[in-house]
Image (cartoon, rainbow over all chains, first blue to last red; front, top):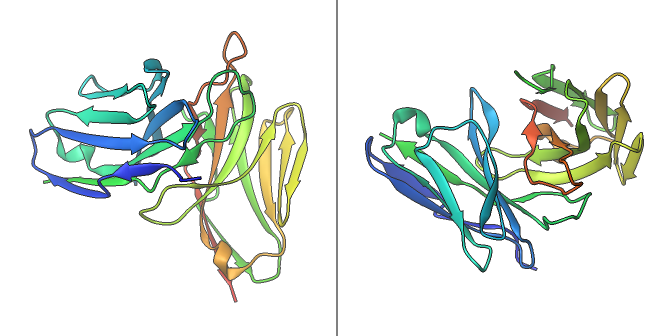
Length: 115
Length: 117
């Protein structure tokens, strides 16, 4: 079974630009969550999508958005990039639904650098 | 408000000995706890988990202990191996109304484990 796939692995953008990151979850998994990892803040939850609906959101500005498609693949978008958005963005998939004790499996991440 | 804390930024252990990584939490609504191992520039790798209704879970060299009254959990690695050297994250999930399992995890800041040969 293939794991969680994130593309691209590395990205360099200029301040003010926007960026779209992609995540393909494990086959059969319906929940996709996004996290931002920075040296100062650790792993911070951005949002979670389940069955194409956002069902949980972290404390990030509206510049951060996401969506999920019918095949469970998800994208996150960051508009008007700031230098502080430089981070490792991680996607996690789990079975979701009413499965109580489920683990989240992470992709390799996308390293975004804003210059 | 940091609800999950790993107070030791680093831990150094000799190969073959026990590694004990600690984690404290403040939110009594957390119902499921997980440990992840992470290398730089890679995604976290799931190690072991424990439900709040249990106090111990074991998987090979890894054992997680949960003390709900103290809001404390620990990960024991026995015996420690040089390949275990990585950053270890404790994560917690909060129970939601209706009993559904949401994907949001709250992470600690991580502990760097170094196992010396």
